[in-house]
Image (cartoon, rainbow, N blue to C red; front, side, top):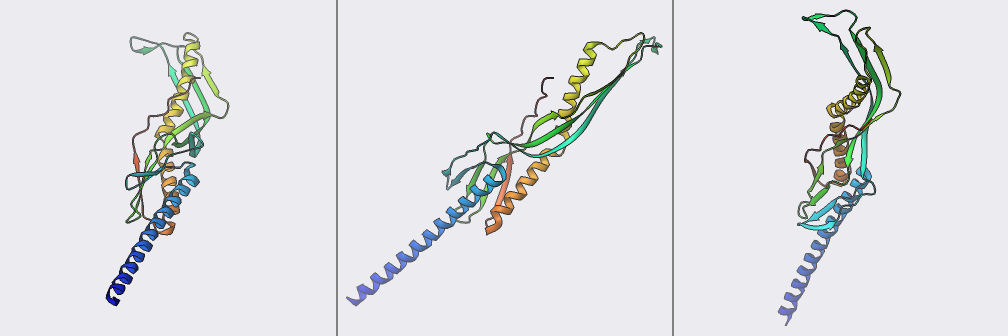
Length: 221
């Protein structure tokens, strides 16, 4: 009888140890989920979709559609010179010049309607986040457009040419934004901050940037 009692006590003890161990693992995963959710909310204003063992435990939500992370002001200048020729020789009094310039504010950040997903390994507590690349969110003229022109006696600047160079200036500002380091800067800032917050309690984290965003198209004048 004592033999069976002893076996029962051992089994109960083992069951209690397994229960406590499993409960501890669940609590640790729950803590990691909370930490990931809070980190994304603080840095990106978005709750990502979080999965554990391919089971969705949090769905993605965001109070806003876009979040600008970095911005800079850029002075953009554009111009052209044109003259008439005859037999490959410039005709006098036909050279005309037009220059336009204006300050623009360029902003880069994230479209929060795109997928932000996080997978958590319940065994290792490894956090693997998948996020869209940063994109140029806006290119806004923030100051007066300055227009310089030198008309030619025999080759006048047309209204169509004036309108075209203004349109081209907007396109040049968008091109400047796309070629700048703003998108890279936005991703680096977000990645650094997320890792600081998530790794604070020892959880390893890996961030993967997916997809290629379409360039922001120029706005109509």
